[in-house]
Length: 191
Ligand SMILES: Cc1cc2nc3c(=O)[nH]c(=O)nc-3n(C[C@H](O)[C@H](O)[C@H](O)COP(=O)(O)O)c2cc1C
Image 1 (cartoon, rainbow, N blue to C red):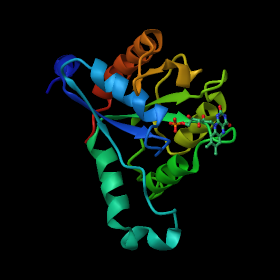
Image 2 (image 1 turned 180 degrees about the horizontal axis):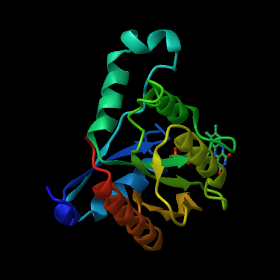
Image 3 (image 1 turned 90 degrees about the horizontal axis):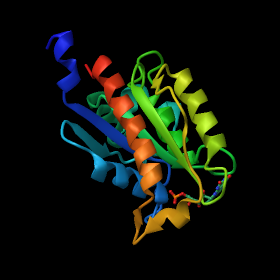
Image 4 (image 1 turned 60 degrees about the vertical axis):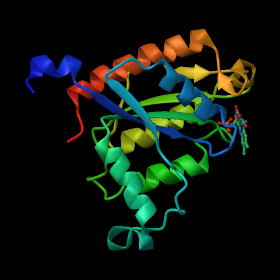
């Protein structure tokens, strides 16, 4: 496909939730974005339930779940990470998954991968501290962090209706960023 055709290229995205809670608001946000997608974009969900990172179990000994997780990231053009903040930082389950994805060093599937970050909180701060930590972690693995205004969703519990994230203003804001992510993905498609 020539450079001129990239604007119509199909884009595959992978959603990662920083929470594995059954009624997670972070998952509900990803689902709201899924529901708002137009044609030409697909957003699938990753499973971040991986064993605790252990370098002894990495390399030749990497387990099937970790291999599948790395493969899922390698196959998509970009990531959408939606996460709460735990104790002013990235929830351990998400950091653990990113640590697995970060290896082998220098050959991580996150390298040159466009990533959009959404944080949320039932409080007023919207997970800004987790957002800052995510930037640091993604920088360290040479991912491409979507530039622009941060997507920080406060009072998330009050924006859930019948189990769905239903705040139109937040959805519109996040979708504008998602479309910028898609443009970025078209410049950096998965191999
Ligand atoms: C262990 C733990 C630590 C938390 N720490 C914070 C925090 O530092 N800042 C904050 O805004 N919310 C904090 N919360 C509240 C979470 O933002 C809230 O539980 C959120 O709904 C979790 O996201 P989820 O709905 O996707 O599971 C914490 C919750 C837990 C369970």
